[in-house]
Image (cartoon, rainbow, N blue to C red; front, top):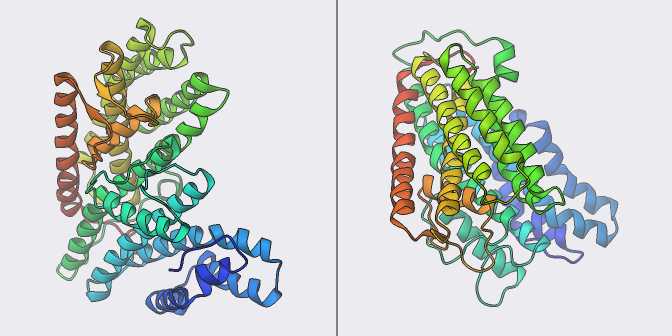
Length: 414
């Protein structure tokens, strides 16, 4: 797609250019005119209305500079939805799954470009920039990130950029496993047409695991802004409290595990809300409780996944939530080691070394992206990083095997 500029031709350059028209036409043809979602239809028609109404150039530029982001996000979701709800495996399903992966990378590149435009220097692009060149470099960076190559020639500098990179790397790790499991499931349906019943509407549209996964993603995205706000550490403590409540609700069980989880959550909250020195014993104990809680909650989710017999959306959200909690636990562990032995982790100049920086390092390790600008300096951190990377490598493989072994539900084939 053409890159948005800041003059009056923004909409035309972004959407109505030749590549934009090809993209729109191919998308409608691929989905089928009758299956184009309403939000996507509105986004496709909007630029035409802008041109026909002859709106002010400044308004058109403002709309066009961010227009391609929701368009790409909705288009990516529409293609994924088409693949997930396919009735059989054919060439379109395979190609569509690949196209959705590439569309997601382009969408993240568009988000990165918008962030770089709003916060110049959010990424280390290197050399003299320019909007067109920067978008090309950020598209390359997005593809390197979603495939977890992590060359390190371009790295995120701003905390908001770091959290977005974490989300994309998690998507890049889990998406192939889920898609391959879905394709295998479709391929075996011709031999077995007995589907498990769909779960009740309360689980499909308001399940606790979906709530937990969205809460964890929201925490990841909002952490930089709260850390930079006047609330600071207190705001992060409140965010941690909400996250812990969501995890307790989602992974609630009976017996000794519940008491252990509540106890660890209380210790973690005490450290999170502590307003004293960040290297105090209270903060360290709180981080220990936080790491322990994430591991217990992850264990509860994995135990539930091991006992589940049907593939539902809740199963997918539970798998996503468990992976996210592993990333948060790894980040808290890195921060704890840094407090116990200052200088254990190298942070280059300009890169956040606070809560967000350690969480970012945790997810880059778990997803094996590892750009290399943040790296371990002591044997303890090196050992923890290698353990985290091993878990990150085997988790998608085990998840794939588990999803393939489950029965398809009517919900996933509706």
